[in-house]
Length: 366
Ligand SMILES: [Zn+2]
Ligand SMILES: [Zn+2]
Image (cartoon, rainbow, N blue to C red; front, side, top):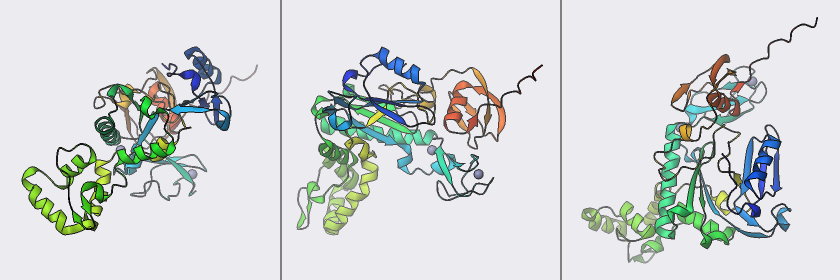
């Protein structure tokens, strides 16, 4: 169930309906007003700003920005996981047929096997590995926020984004008033982007003060990753010194994907962005932007964010990829009429992989 977020009266709201554009710059004060907006407009997607304004319903330049939550976006599609090609479906822009990309092509060029059109868009049915990979990035992010920036766990809300990843909303007054530039620095910090050797005791003139295991922050993490366990340290330090500045810089850069949290920097720096409203369903999946709670490992979006009921409904399903929801497997389907739980029908329809069955012909007029 969707509730009004904290300080709702200072936030901008927005929504989308199926197959139509975005409506934004709306102001709502209460959960009741929010429900009226959702119901009256039959929205497919609901959004709310991370920012606070004195006049949320005015154009951006006149809103009078007062601050924003610090938000991080982690998306499994940015992780370049090898599983992705196996659950990407292309949908022909000309005839609408979904089809699997030719071997190894992923989301690249491909012709529709039905009509030959080269135009298509792609949609992914993320698998368990995608979810696990994104969770790993969330865990890295939370660790750095907690250990290095003293963000309290109770000030971090982790949500399944509703489709392919996770949103982390940090509500900590220290960050509320900071602008885009400072948010970019925090984004680079948690991502371990742009680390310079000098910070880790390696200068062009030589090494002095290489990090020790057990040091706080990135120095400690780099020591553990580069200079190894205690027994190996003297040798590894000798080797690092001998290899010199350029080699050290390259090794630091090489650590970035494994040590840093892979976040979308543009999301964190945008202080005017509207985000999917917590608790609402995503029109791209029919799954909810659901809070993950304290047990991120135990959270399964295909169970815990699948909130549509399970009443049987009839659809014509064309999902070349098998998927699992609420512990049940579905598909693959090749254009057949099937009866499935409503949550599975919603998932496929939102992915563009199922349609309502043709209506029976109307009785002939007498
Ligand atoms: Zn086609
Ligand atoms: Zn996957």
